[in-house]
Length: 212
Image (cartoon, one colour):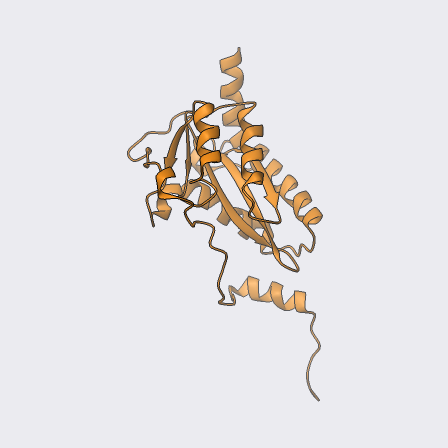
């Protein structure tokens, strides 16, 4: 165009994110059930969550890269808000969820793990892993996204704090960014629900006291 201005595509993406402008298009359905036989009831209604390792929440979200996206699975302790572990995958194969859970359960074990009714959590491998570990299984009610609000809140915080404002083009860059962000989130970020304390401070101090 005669009076046009050449602008880098990434700059336009960043400006649109800053202005809250998003394209409308079909997004991956991460909550599709595998089989109704593997659905479990929601166990947390009216429950007071008062200590670490009482309840872990697990969930999957997708993260955009310069081209395509990756899937992020997180395990969060609902009492301390600490991210216990996480895993990235370029596909929705359930192995990345199971591997992350095995790694986390090898060191600690919650009384209950809560998830949605997605296919990664309503399958025999997931159910079998938790039952073998002696962990009770809780699942959100169908269409009840608030049942997993603490985990969803972390995803929102993560995306607004870093993913929406940083241009990440490769899985390697994304892993470095997430490693740094989750370390700082756990160790240094004060949380209002914890009276200004940090997630790792609450979680690790209680664990250390138990060992002592």
